[in-house]
Length: 194
Image (cartoon, rainbow, N blue to C red; front, side, top):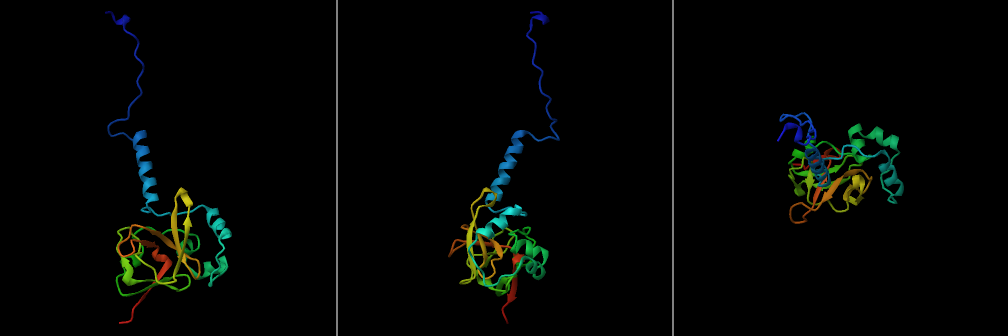
């Protein structure tokens, strides 16, 4: 066989080096899928929200709260970080709240209106980076369905002022099996007198 009788070869695509700087499409898709699963499972916080989502929810929300202030008044009463969480439904970074490591006897209250929300007796370490409880105090919180970011979750808010606290999941300990995963900045801690 002569060299001129062999069929021409198709040019091959250049490959990334073994230490390559460009990830493969497969690696990209796998990491994107893993990131989406982590967000859906509530393991990655929602750091921002669409600007219109808060307005749309509040406009269609028939609830009236005992404690109600104008947006300007809430901004005066809360720190910028508290405002972002309580009034705009933001989320603090995991492991950033001192309340995550609060183990004294006492009560966790709403940072917006001081309503007692959770007893320290129901707090547990969920290893998620946010203060977690298996049950709120009676008549302390309300919930509604949160469908932002293409997920269906249950949002928890203060029943007196409507401040966003976090979300509740069904992967908590006994006796309820629930995990109220709360933002520490949305709460204050009142130690029980000795």
